[in-house]
Image 1: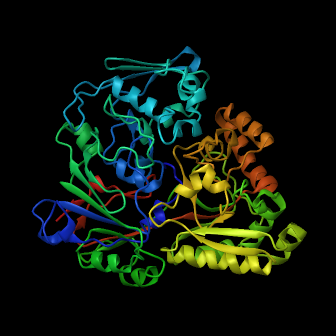
Image 2 (image 1 turned 60 degrees about the vertical axis):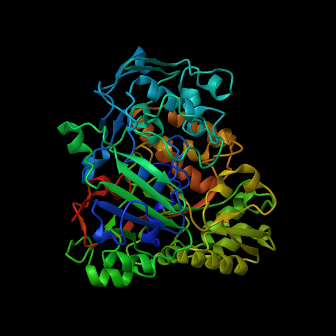
Length: 564
């Protein structure tokens, strides 16, 4: 899903404390509230940002599913039905002409944002502009190639035009002109970046972006602290037709999310079991006992432990441009791939954490073919042979979230393995409220004290295509001062050309090309250690009914939940 700079799965697997007295929307406890307030806990971190064009972390997008109105969207449905886009703001899928380079969307009449303003094509035009503007903290659209795909996109992204010339907003008709055929373009339109926003929504060069704004989904953001309390309220202007209420229901009156970066999750799970909160992640230290008590995916009057699959890959990123130079050496990166056991790292997340992996693609993506190259056992012998003299006394800064028991254990394991290789490892804790800030900011990542390897990170599908996993993450030509998805800071001219060639293909040839890239990337370059295709593990308290798990978002559909 979404940037899947994969933070949320284990943020949500950590839980968070909720001080009910601080809530502006309810009474002293979840049970006594007159309104139907779904209380979600989130620990071990916070929202990166909920600005619609800056948000690019899993938990940010999981929340925005409840507030967004996109041209195409995923329905609130279980199984594969919930992973297939259907028209939302658009009255139908786009009309595609000009040899696949012109897309025309017709916007449904009568749609409104939460502030009552009418939704037209101009609301979507503004979303494209904010996604690419140099006046924004991050030009995330560049990572997905939108500057190259859109006619006039490069000129606009460079600050040389006031609008993107290839986007025409005329009443309820949105016409998009592309410079080339982009096979994944229809799928891209389901990304939260391209949701309807107010036509005058300001640009923001602040990392947190605009925190409260009118939106067109079934809910809107009523208040937002990002790292403490975020409150959603039902959008009174949400359409009442069966198409909208069936595909995107809005059952809770209020959705309250409490974030506590320093929580370890145990207290929050206990609160969920008592019905004091409704959804809590289950952390590694609690998963065994919770499985023994509740089983897996077995609803009961006492609550339910939900474990679901994802489209994500967890990895340890290695910084190719770290100032100390250690992880700029391919043989060192390969040595660390041998030395750092996947199975040991994954064990720190406890039972049902996921399946080990040694590659970038996951089974849901066309072209996936299982690769086994480095092994999962932590082979120090092969590591020493591969790294050779470059390992001796080499500094290795290990970046991790100290509030996470699992990440702390992984960091200490990495430190131990690096010591055995004769390296000089150093543990570098992250800002508890901003894990990704130091990764996506080039000056921090590549300056004094920058990291060499991360204890955690990863990616989930923005859309089902290899471009999203490879070109978005590893095309070093897109590295910017801020807002980098490529926090490996990997930039290889040969591999860039191979990614370009894969992106130019269609159909089965495209899938085969990305499958080949998967093998080439890990055997020739290896700027990260892929280690696990994770599961999401969360506990739904006794008040929760109609819980529907989304494989795409890697969490339950909050909008569908009914509170008794």
